[in-house]
Image 1 (cartoon, helix red, strand yellow):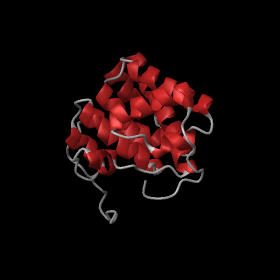
Image 2 (cartoon, helix red, strand yellow):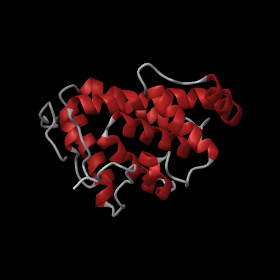
Image 3 (tube, rainbow, N blue to C red):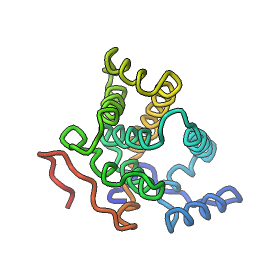
Length: 196
């Protein structure tokens, strides 16, 4: 992590803690500090992870669209943890890493299809306060994804907002997952200084 969390990490203990540490070490090579922060309330950690696993199993909306949408939410909200993890997951799930890298500057990038651009716009519009989703954008996505796909995408983006906003509020930041597997730094929009 680049900063200090607002809640110090707790020691992860017990049977569930041992399983969690083993799983995270297998996935990331270590136990992320963020898990220690969330360990202060194991029931909320379990609920969040359970929702994430269930949502990942849905298949009415293409996985890559949901991945880009989650990263767009994270970029807009400012959740460096979610961006780092999303980029890392894109590589490990066989998604287009070049596109994932461009999500923070999707409006300037020419790598996205019209549908992907609509999904990214929808993710940002849903993440505004108040939301700025338009009837026209919704209609295009309904035509492209069908009702089940649009509902799934909408719930996925809502869950992404919950995770990203919670991480930002707790001061949970990127932990270098993407860098640890040799991925290039995420692209930055023009006029935004790259982190040192």
